[in-house]
Length: 441
Image (cartoon, rainbow, N blue to C red):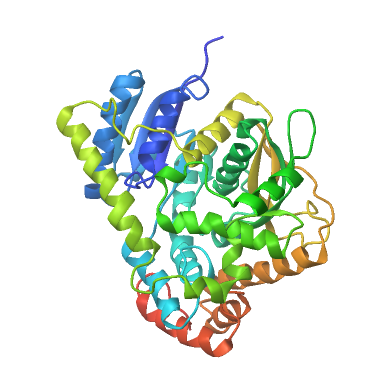
């Protein structure tokens, strides 16, 4: 039987993460065979060099695929099978404000956590709703695989607007990044680790990490991190801020040793420490603009000028890229592989609200993900998650109702803020900075 070939559209084709995704689609072309690949972006000038890079790469590595880059929704969404979303509403200019405004008030300035994540989330929601509506008008059965940050708030909002859309899936690559790093500690390929994970997006823990023989390696990995520290698997390629982020896992374990934490928990557990070690004048956004951003567009230009992508540092598949392609493949081929995904709880974590959008293990086949039960979680983790979910839910409600009251309540609940006076000052400044993106009454 002839294998079906698919049309895939990458929304946010001008993203600096697109080259890795392009390479992964080439490397995994047998798992997810394509007939057409479309890069779609509302910023045509930004997308063009990456679109040309894509055409050169595929000509050399996957020549049977037609590669198009466009700003036309109909070209992007008509008769599409898979839509990969990785948008950044407001670009790095707004990300910089997300990070720097909270820091002025002694509060964590971070892309997805705290007030910065709140502002980014409210910018992302309307664009994601528009994307889903547009896709459904032209391709009602397409799988929409969403990477857009902050995934937690976006997932809550999309679940409210599209509660019955079973082909709209929210994912994040940080658990995979951590698994790769844990595997390196014990000299095991991360594909041979079977995790048990629970929490919210960027707010979760590994409860177990089994090897292929069924041995839980969590105690050994914790012991080694406490003794030697923790680095990302690809530390040579990481910016300094990411190295510090991973190093903090040791500090978290010293104080809260039950489970292996997601790195983002440091912002919620040690907010004062994190603020004291963040540069309010040069944040992660500046680091990315001066680093990855320049590298991607400089290297894209070199590939275009030379006419070949061979030996290009951009032609490397990355963890986030492999995950989304593997997920699409599992849906297409009914492989029943396990992935960590963001879905409505509905009893998966027994002692959390059913409507919480939790991040848990799922088995994925052609009917979509099936969640694996976690059971009850301890009081400490339950309390932290319930507070964080209340913040996420209020943030989404603040957007839909344009409610200043609920926005203020959300930020006051967030563990990176806590203080109501600070929350109000930061919120008032974020409203001004985000004029034209969202408003509150």
